[in-house]
Image 1 (cartoon, one colour):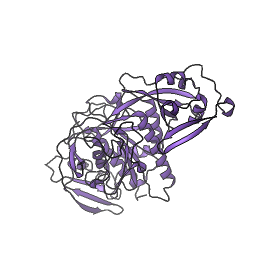
Image 2 (cartoon, helix red, strand yellow):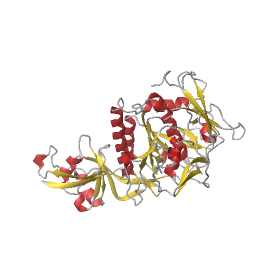
Image 3 (cartoon, one colour):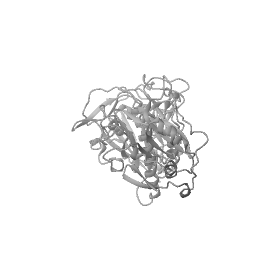
Image 4 (cartoon, one colour):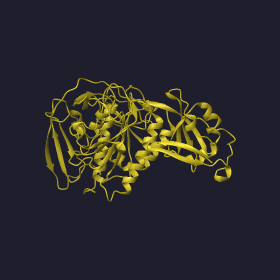
Length: 468
């Protein structure tokens, strides 16, 4: 027997591994051919000495540790379980991978870790405003709120027809009074300043973490450490009090980025942890208020990651839609992941005149567009809170996440990501956008409140006649 020390986010676990082959059901027989490398794509930015190891189905990390007969920790190699695959992440040199890890017959493949980046976007000077009032409009079964003097980009998302900035009077955003209630919107980003007044008491750090386990950089403290306050901005557009599409949603800070970049193993690990939390809440939903979840990931990388695809597919199968940005390079989305994964909702950006934003990526992988030009969102400087203007597909994706939370909260869509996706498509406005190639779906996000093809007792197309 020998001890293997396994470090994970909650502390340290000491596993006793059997050196003798007879003490494990998996024989110590090396596979005849080495487990293959996958994902060697020249367009992907690989992280040196960092690998994702995928096990064959039915094989476990304990089986693997028993087989290799080594204590990775004592060798100075850090590793983390990625049971959503199943597999694990190992920080080690390629010699260890080739001479030990790849020889285990339980290993299916190895993928080098890659780096993903937040899209670049423009920022203007900060402003501080209190600018809106709300008027309530009642129907038989639900209550609408009209946010008067709302940001024009919000008004675009509840209007059934095109608006003209300045020509249609004061912009108004129509929304369901309880939009987002009991929905967890997980913001995968560079942190959120959860004390910003835009969030009230609805923003929190994932699992009350103070330090993120999902990023290896020095700026792992959970608050927003990005120079442009990216995560705080994104959270406010998904569910902020003034700027958000779903004003009652819970905003969960899942910090996976530092210095505006994320690492694929950390994102995959975070996806697994969110899926576990979602499933646990879903099982307890009769005892605790829980309507469902959304994941927002406003970043991406070039190429393709099979490990990321597996993780997102399993999250989607659990009932969690994953919203991602198309990118700001004015190019095709086919080479950008996770936008090019079938299970993600990839979002392009439009300007205030319903034209493709000049920076927005495009292509058949895009599922919907949303406003992303000069968008007002929450910001801060030291202890001073205010707002700023940002442009980018990140902002567009955040709006879509908030709108999905609106649908989820009304119907309690905890387990059916495909139905959430259908609600989004059925309520979007088609054929209203200009400037996109024909291969890009012409569809603008909309919460359905003012859609003409629904019953007055429904808040949106497809909604049940009474709230669930």
